Image (cartoon, rainbow, N blue to C red):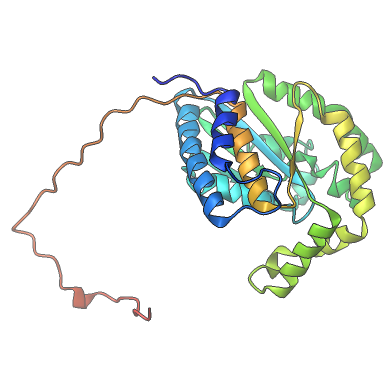
Length: 283
């Protein structure tokens, strides 16, 4: 078995991969982005195998402003992984029955078993954000969440769950640009919900809610990691690199894979292709 990869190893590798381009430059070339991402995807597969090999339980929360790029990084992380191991959870509006349950209950049912990783595209922090700002919960429900959330997360950690929390931070100007892009592009228009439009008017309210949330839930046991997200490509690379650095992992031993020869059956005659209905080849 290979040695465990440390945080320092990842920092070195990423530093090498982005040279000689300046780190503080606004843009990253497509070629450079794809090169770094390809290397990170290999590491993500290794991490996935390690999680399964060691029966780890990993939960990653992605929170932030609307259009901050949460969905993009989740898609980027998951696209090279096994969906049976890396699961994405994006819960919709709670049903009347779910509204009557303990608040955390429907999130608990989505937690990973041994050997699994769950990526939450928004999470129980809906209560501290959109529900609080938009008045979808009562003041008592909000205060109860703020009291109990740190205890809930400590309970998860004591139960052996590796909990990682990311907050994607985007500027007012960049969010406005992305909203306009979604309006102009018919393939992106579905991303712009009525709630997104209302959130523009409540920018300051959301800022205050985020600040209050951090005061209570940014703990030593379960800290928030803030991802500057005005540049989507850099945000994805930085987030994935950091994610790989916080879970020490090694190479899982594999037996050599040998493809067995196909067995021929001369007595079997397959039906003619003309009996099948094919998709027209227009391209």
